[in-house]
Amino acid sequence: MLVLGIESSCDETGVALVHWHDQSMPKLLSHALYSQIDMHQAFGGVVPELASRDHIRRVLPLTQEVLLAGNRTLSDVDVVAYTRGPGLAGALLVGAGVACALGAALDKPVLGVHHLEGHLLSPFLSADPPEFPFVALLVSGGHTQLMRVDGVGRYQLLGETIDDAAGEAFDKSAKLMGLGYPGGPALAKMAEQGDAAAYALPRPLLKSGNLDFSFAGLKTAVLVQAQRMVAAERAQLLGQQPPQVQPTGSSTAGFDALPIAQQCDLAASTQAAIVEVLAKKSLLALKHTGLQRLVVAGGVGANRALREQLNAACANRSVRVHYPELHLCTDNGAMIAMAAAMRLQSGLQQASKTYAFDVKPRWPLDSL
Ligand code: KG4
Ligand code: ZN
Image 1 (cartoon, rainbow, N blue to C red):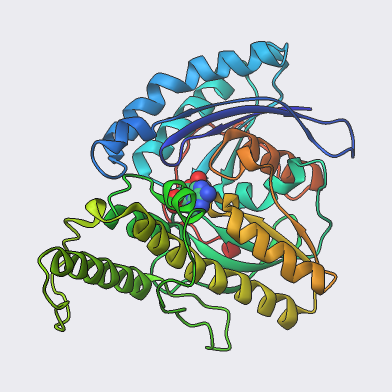
Image 2 (spheres, rainbow, N blue to C red):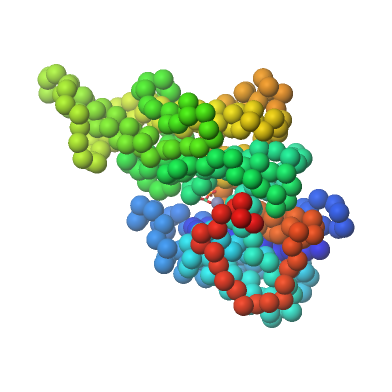
């Protein structure tokens, strides 16, 4: 079987081919990705209309690229899979529209895939795939969830963020440090040069005893700390005492003029706060479920500090941790093709020759 997968939920166009025989684990044949990040950077975030238009430009050339790389033609494709949600409505419509048009033209069935299921199952593309059941920490730009996963399509939500996602905490903190969009990777890079203990930042809901997260307050604490650092630096230059009053407003003007070591210290302190909460809650989820396997997926799963902390904590507890390959942590077509392949192979779902499509910009994973 050969599945063509198309991802277009946000700011990355991804296309991939996954193939398998009978009950063997599906394998990635080829994949291609185009990131729109450079285009959105000028606006400080994703502009949905521009994202949709760019997906239109990229999706067919990328499809040709993966067919060529996989030494296949369109007529070899058995099923066309696409991201049905969640994501930006207009962006999703591009992938869904192209997938259904291809399906209709080729007389092949189509299958709409849940984006987060794609992330969740992406570690099955790695050389060291997990076994069911496991706890999954899903950490992307829009979601932060802990799930119990008993098999393909068997997902139980254990906890999730009540406000910002972990990726948003990285991105919003990075933005107020002047690191552009999406700032997560840039903040993580600066953090490597900084002292994580330099500034005491809150660890929201760490001691709540449940598996929920909250990151909105952390961003405010980072803002206040950045403003204090700018005020202290200014006072020092002027030979004055640092101001005692709490800073106000949302400006961090002057932060990028601070000594780079200080900027790196704040980046490291911010990352440490996010990572500690994610790691400790993941361990709590393992304890609550009694499971001995953890899967980490989604863009923030690429974070090196998170991986180091989880690896060390899990090694102590004889827990196996699985990650997608680094380049498949962020959005891509391979995970969509893989999720479709695993759903089809498990018999959970059939692809259909119904080409009237809709998309689901909001779509809870545990409703699958
Ligand atoms: O899964 P993803 O590509 O897209 C969504 O489905 O949202 O995740 C993107 C998120 C962004 O917030 C980005 O800043 C974050 O993942 N991210 C990172 C790193 N790489 C990507 N955050 C921290 N450290 C990284 N190395
Ligand atoms: Zn994603």
